[in-house]
Image (tube, helix red, strand yellow):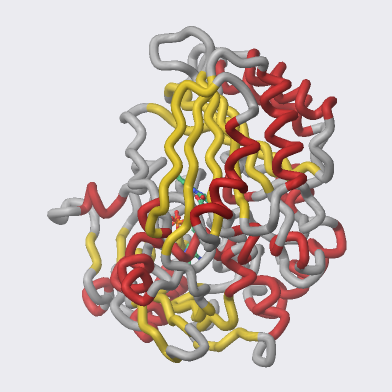
Length: 438
Ligand SMILES: Cc1cc2nc3c(=O)[nH]c(=O)nc-3n(C[C@H](O)[C@H](O)[C@H](O)COP(=O)(O)OP(=O)(O)OC[C@H]3O[C@@H](n4cnc5c(N)ncnc54)[C@H](O)[C@@H]3O)c2cc1C
């Protein structure tokens, strides 16, 4: 039976009121044939089957923050999961929480904060639980509680044939493995079950330095992190100063739990990294760390590259320094890894790079179209940093090439992902993503 457009719930097509808003995500405008906003798992299945019958490409949207704009499309069907945003506690004792595939981390926090709980996730409230989790999920609790996927215990997935399955360690275990890092390749996740951690408040330090010797600062931060306990997760950010001039350097340190004295002791080494111009150290509700996140100005695109390094040695830091100096508009962030993140076996999840010491990100905004060739210049100078890496995190990569896939998935991981794809989505219905072809 052919499903009519009109039988689909809450859908908008070109010309409808609200179409322009419904068509766009953070980094893309889009011109889909229709946008569907299902309110139930059954409606998700209907929309998937409808798209297949009509030969429409499916774009799955959770929080709409994907760097490649995959949450919309030109001419396809957008499955906007925004109505599947319920956050329900299933078991108070186990802190088991079921979260709809279209919820944002800000919505999750609204339910968890009164309980004094948190789920290790990202740093921005508007990012979707769907996209962040399926890629891995790096945030402020990473060294104490691992990636978001390390706290996931089950997911319900609408497959390409419209059936609903539960994936967990005991049910569809290969699918469950693949969902933890393999992206949106295998189906539409309608809800996720996480075990939350008992984290109400954290101690959070934000320290800026100027003037500074860049490589000394980075090396000092690395050494401080090597000596830090797993309760400490940190990043160092080098960003262009507004109006030009020397870049701004900022270290952020999150100490999960711990009393105030212990937190002060943990943060102290970071205060000795250079000439401090401003430092705030406060006990904050975990959810208050989540940034609102801005909307990029119209007509610009974010260029993001990252690499995961096994050892943050001096040669790597020199390469970071040269990259940072290659353009006045680039920002660089180093995020600490290790701790609980590194205790998970490399083959336990489809995200495999557990031995990495740090993630290095390079990013900038470029005009669209980029007539100045700024993107090419940045990508070229990034290659020197990337040469020191052993992998990448696809959620922070704004490119989509075979080389990106190869860097994200070691050969054995990739072969296993292809096998799961062949079993669960042999016709590649879910292709608008960092695609693993069956
Ligand atoms: C401002 C900003 C801050 C960020 N901060 C962090 C951070 O701290 N840590 C971190 O790890 N990442 C971070 N990211 C990266 C983020 O994880 C990715 O951009 C992610 O893809 C966004 O997910 P989304 O659901 O918001 O995006 P969408 O664009 O809605 O989804 C991205 C893709 O994920 C897939 N997908 C999403 N939901 C589902 C679902 N329910 N079922 C099946 N497939 C689905 C689809 O393929 C979709 O195209 C950040 C990104 C931005 C823009």
